[in-house]
Length: 212
Image (cartoon, rainbow, N blue to C red; front, top):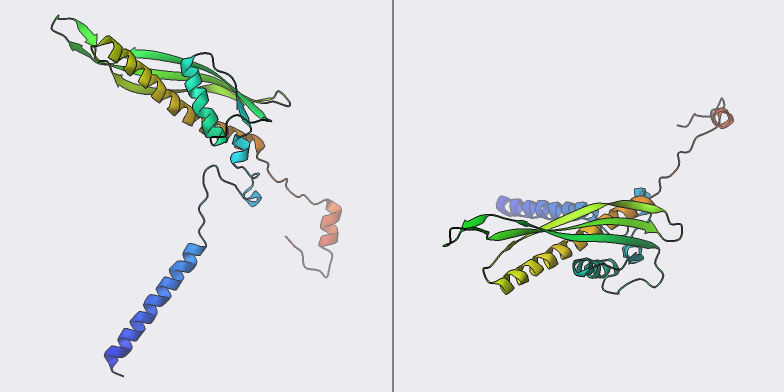
């Protein structure tokens, strides 16, 4: 066998060895979703979609609030609707506020807004139904920019579209907030194991190695 053949075989062996090492390294890596199950060894209780699906969303007071509620129910239940036996309840107080964007000068030499910013804000209270305990409360808001056409009906349509977009984004934000708050509320920390003086003396008797 020539030296070039031996060099080629050694090169192939090194390549195979590198691939095997890479596969072993990848085998030790795991990817976990943000809302997926977590091992108790990680220091928290198992948390999955069933917990989010146990949240009841209180009725809304207006159209924009209903948009937020509908999307939030879909996100929490995975499209299955409200839970039949809810464990938690979230109350939302939704409001839509419009502010003007940049202005332009028209032929009549008057300043009219050419765009706007729609802010959809909600106060929320997350409660455990059985005990009435308030797990979390706060305020979250989302903004959506939109153009204001000169035609009145088109302008109304643009405002409603902006409200709907902001409502959907707020529902997604609220799902994240609920998941974070419930994870914190249901997580537990393993208690530290503390030995008594008698146990320490028994453990460290002469003739036996001390353990730490």
